[in-house]
Image (cartoon, rainbow, N blue to C red; front, side):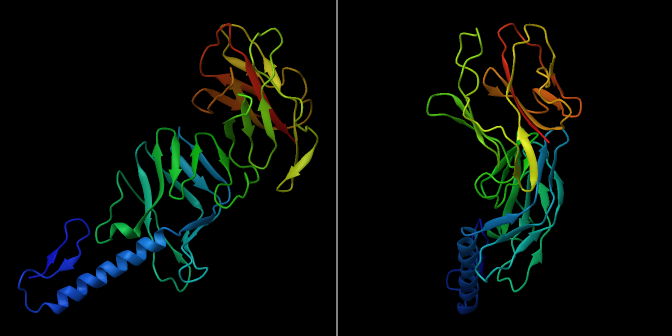
Length: 292
């Protein structure tokens, strides 16, 4: 009677088995399919998805357009994850069965579990879509999204229009913030009288401009030293927004970006932010603002 390998279940003949040829050929066929699938897996590209948003409080990950996945082995034909959402608990993974030898686009369904597994499916055909680790979601193409972020992730080019904020250390040791589709901001100067190396370079353009057809303005950065015991911030403390509409705000506390939902709750309509902590005397805040 034919035997099977322990992990992948490939068939092979038992010692002195007769007939030998049939289980041998079946095992070779299974290995051939596996090798093909794994070769294609290494070439998969992801596109589409529209605006991807993640809220760790509700555990809901959403995407506004179909996500198209292909290895281009049979031309531009796609495994399609239709626009929608999925709920993810910490440590939970969403995954799908990747179809092979596509002759047309195929809509695939997501499965959720604490591990990648599906009865009757081989591991090489089960592809990771997203896994939640803490407040971050990691996608199968290597990209990720943090709590409160929203933007174009798949195929968005150099930063994307309205994409995810990237925080890096600058060449001068300061913090460099790159907003998807927007300018790079170097936080390096001083607060007046603070004695520290924290503030704003003056080389960033602030004029009205457009990304993805949306005309908006990057307002002058707002610096606040609230003192001890404060639990909220006025995002228009300098009166610079006026009658304009605030559409985006990022809050830095002593040079560290504060996570929406975990450390701050931003109310764009009220032009305010609730701090999910109480300030101390040494706290200094810098606020990035975008208006229309």
